[in-house]
Length: 146
Image 1 (cartoon, rainbow, N blue to C red):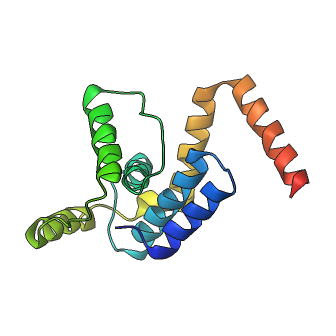
Image 2 (cartoon, rainbow, N blue to C red):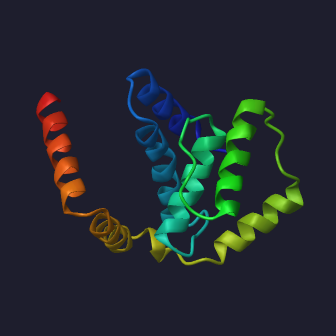
């Protein structure tokens, strides 16, 4: 379950008319903080991001389904339906302990500044030059507005 502050920040982003990916960013940010605090770990920065996006979908953020395997899309659909259902039933205590235990055995270094930076560089390189240029221009425009 996401922290109350994370939910508030995401709702504020929604009220401001920000994109779903920006709203979901709050959940990813929370997940990275959890890993750094040692609440649990992740095997890669991608896993940390995936956990955050899953939490966002379950909290009601209208994210588009991911590109990828059928099982990945099925999981995203499951998360979206869980948000619509609104049932806040917690998993059993033994299951929660098992999940937490498994995540705690994962490394913490996956949410380090260098690991996240490396992931961002690799993701940006995959996008292509024009896409990066447009993103930079968009960022510059919003920076001037603020």
